Image (cartoon, rainbow, N blue to C red; front, side, top):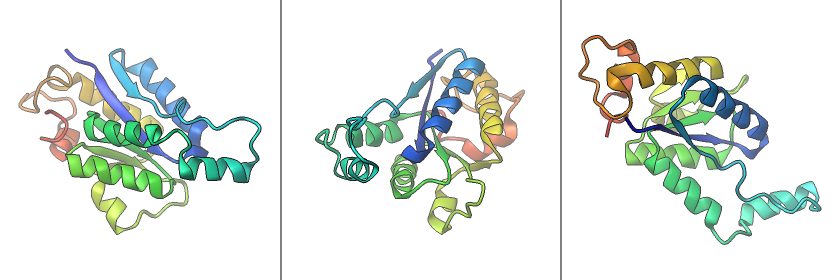
Length: 169
């Protein structure tokens, strides 16, 4: 069985939350591969906040972070939208949706996703804990991520019905 491959689309402002989410996934799912952007494109520490923003916006790494994130959204088994995030995370969700990669979303505490973001997310979860539980159930379903949702004893049938076809490629 192959590992579950996950990418998290989120604002750099949520760096700590993304890392905690990844730790929770690793603790619950033994066979998970996380396509992790959090250690990529780290600006030099001596930059001011304004200079860091400019550094990120112009990507001083020559497009490496963009290429990594775009590729991850297209090839992950599932993309997690962690809100409230900005336009970059919305673009990443668009990459995923366009590639047929399922998207699980977690709204920010005061976030009301717009029409496009709401429509591209296959399943909205209440919080990170629920997201980890959904991914755990899907990993147990039908022998794991390498098989289709044809199993009649699926423990995650409601989730499978929402994500059917896109999760199992």
